[in-house]
Image (cartoon, each protein chain N blue to C red):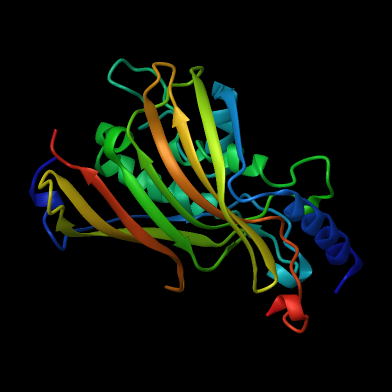
Length: 119
Length: 159
């Protein structure tokens, strides 16, 4: 991994990826429309981060997410992340903001990630 | 409220009342290749793809590590579909060691909080996953509802 790809302000993204799995929602919770479980968001975020940090993600990855809005079955999701800082205590650790949007740009999940970026 | 929602809520509420903050569970689990393949397929992930170690051994996709344990605190089977484990509203996970397919993992989970909010019953669980070598592989805090059913906003418990 080069310093360039982890410079502050640099962005990475993945998608759009269609959410095909579904669980039955209650009539009150989801208007009876099947939605994609939130684990899908996390899985796609992980895929982006593992692609960016390879092996380091398994040994030093941190990811905290708030799920804001479900993805409807068949709807597409885009994952984006942006390098925001280097860790104050460890300059080898990079901090990112990370989020998921649907194709209309509506925010579905948002959070923070960090990982050791040096090889 | 529909009959299905009312029925599910009754089951969820009864289950919620049995869960005590501070209570914990411990168990061992093995992620088989078929388990990971199924998760990958459901979540549109190319596996093993990026999920291999330097020796070419397939790794468990990090996102699925605490999924099944969290469901264990939910209602699971054979309850009606509406009452099965709910949805995650927040997740915080730290990974410190890869978990390989077919390796045993020791899980410990402790309920750190439980509450009713906006009509949904929630639990918060702190998890630790320890690998075969006794080293912690991942820790996580999971916020999730018990089931999909909820009280309507017009109900006193739905506010």
